[in-house]
Amino acid sequence: MAGAFIASIICAVIGGIIGERKGRAGLGALLGFFLALIGVLIIAVMGPTEERKALDAKDVADRLLGAGAANDVETPASDAARAA
Image 1 (spheres, one colour):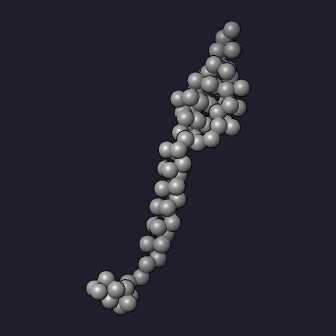
Image 2 (cartoon, rainbow, N blue to C red):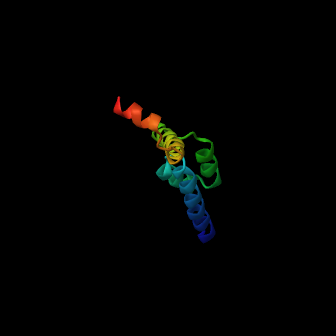
Image 3 (cartoon, rainbow, N blue to C red):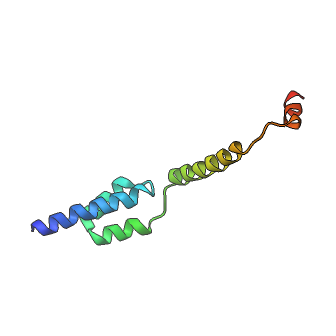
């Protein structure tokens, strides 16, 4: 009996970690705890939430814009464009 409880705790932690990456940490932990490996598999195949997709897209955009901004060099042409 104690072994099953420990296995459920371990699956809850794994489900929570997988779910966190998809914006569903609580659901992943619950499925992992109550359904063990089946719950972990369920959360693993579920897609991310719309909020998580938006956050990921924002992170990608920030990285791309940040990389471009680091390479910007002040030139007379860019100064003239700003003045106009």
